[in-house]
Structure formats: structure tokens, C-alpha cells
Length: 411
Image: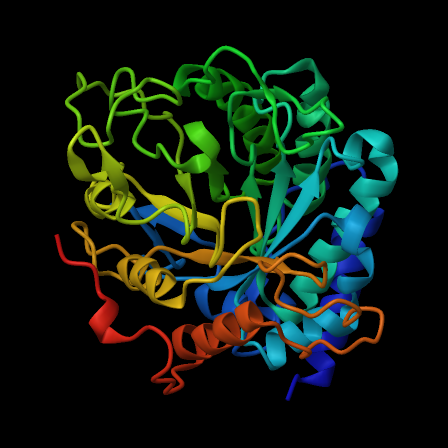
């Protein structure tokens, strides 16, 4: 049961640190643990860091966060409240909540002030319950983070970092799913998009090299260690090692295992991680092409990438990549077991499921109408599966129906 006194102190501290402050105070020494409920994830792990390719706690011990991602607030806003997040913490056992703030698609660009305030409200609630949150600048269409439609990124991240540089629970995801889609303008086929020039790692790096210093400057001002920053990778966060391979980009016509020249174009900042997303019905053992039965085998590819780069799986689903269609629990098991250390680097990879919402898509964890009824446990098949997974990963529960050892990937 949450300690009432600590909860009250957390609320007061959050208001002082995030709702009122508009410029940096003098740097002071703060006992961060006292701001979060006793035994909460943030109280236990503290300010996270990347050490030897691994997400680690403040003491340098490996950490695996596991939680949920929101859907777009403009569609499912009533799903994200004090009560729902308390339920996710106390009954779903989440340790992290990804706050997916769409920029286009009726999101941030429609009303930046409103969306910034909503982001602050949700960050504050996560802090009150002592869980980590991911501030997700959720680009989708267009898929190039350098597109002028995303020109507000610098101001947004400066605003958030200014308010939360002295807090331990905030993680930044600076560009969701870079891709080559320019626009979706065909009303008869809204799922199809026009293509622009391939969005390469070099383009993403140009963007990251302009945004990360903006965030860091706010942390420098209060003398705080740099936060975890998750950076998107080409082809909707699938080509994770594009910084290590010349020509690893969307639409290059290559199989994942084809030889490409090595390079080192990693970002030169502390505590940077590279984003990986998967949807189990599409990203798996591959398909038959050119006489190969396992063309584009994502399991084999990521098994090796996890020995080369620090990776954060900030979004995944049990279904198709559009968030709909049939679910595949066994293939999802295979991914989550790999992310739990069964990989070439023996890495623990943190993950967030898409999505805690009640829309009609099969990726939703809740049935339609659940949020309006405030029934946070009205679960879909996807929700039932992921709630069990979270109980195993974060609470040590015994749930033989998920994460079955028979589903471990072996290369």
C-alpha cells in the first residue's frame, strides 16, 4: 500500500519542480529517493544509465523495465487518468509508461500548449507513483524527423527538460519510427502513403545531434547526470544497427544478413539507446524469397544486434504492424524471451506494449468502451497476455501460459 506521507511529499515536490518552475533554480543537492514512493521502481533503481551496452540502475546494475505505451491522447484521452495509471502500477505491475504524443495526426501541432500541459500532467502522475515515463515525440507521417512539420521539437524538448532535469523518472524518445512515408493523401486507400527519399541513419543522426544538446543543456544547468535518450532507427525502428552498417536503410533491396561495409556512426553522447519495434505477425522468422525460406529473418538479425548496441524496445504488438489483425502469442514469447537475455549480448532489453487503450484494433489492451466505464481490467486477448507477462517480469509471478521456455529462439 502506498505510503500516504511519501505520496503527499511527492505531489508537493512535483508541483514545485514541474508545474511552477519556468527557469532553472540554483543547482542544489536533492535526495531524489524521497520524492518517490518507497520500493517503487524509481526509488529502487534511481537515475538510469547505460553501461557496457546495458540499461543499468544508478549503481550500475542491469535493469529491465517493462510496461505499456499509450495510444494517441486525441483519440483515447479518457484512458489516461490518475486512476488508470494507479491501476497500471498496482494491478498490472508496470515499471514504465510510454507517453506517446503524436505530433501530426491531430496531435501536438494542433495545440502545442495543450499537449505540453497534458504531457506534464502525465509525467507528474508517473512520478507520484514512482514509475519511469518515456516522453515520446511520436512522429509517424511524414516519417522524416527533419521534416519542417516537426520544427517544434527543439522548443518542446527544451520545455520538458527545463522542468524535469532534476527528476529521475523521465526518459526521452526523440523520434518515433523514422520511415520513408511522406503523406497519406488517398482517402480511398488511407493506409497507403507516398514515398520520399529513403530516411537514412545519417538523416536521423543529423536530427539527434541537434535535439540531444538541447536536452543536455537543461541538465547541465542544474548539474544533473544526463538522462536516457532513445533514438529512432530506420524503417519504423527495425534497422537498429544502421549506424554500424553503410547502406542499411529502408528500401535498399537487401536481406538483413547481406554483407554491407562496416562503419561507426554511433551518436557521441552518454546514455543514448537505439529504438527497436516489432509486431509479431510481421517481424519474425521471415518469408520465402529468392529461394530463401527465411528471407528477412528479424529474429536472427536482432539476436546479433543485441551484442553490439544498447537497445530499448519502446513499442511492440502481438499483431500486424498496423496494430490490427490476428495475434500470435508464441512469436511474441520468442521476442520477449530474447529481450530478457536470450541473445548474443546477454542483454536485458526494456519494453513497452502497444497499447493501453480501448479502440477497436486488436493491439488494444482494453475492450471498446472500457475507458469510458473506467474499467481498467476489461481486457482483450492482447491485454490478458501482456498483463500476465508484466506480472512475471516485474513481480516474479508464475504464469506458465506466457514466456514459455519452448519458445526461446536459438540461432
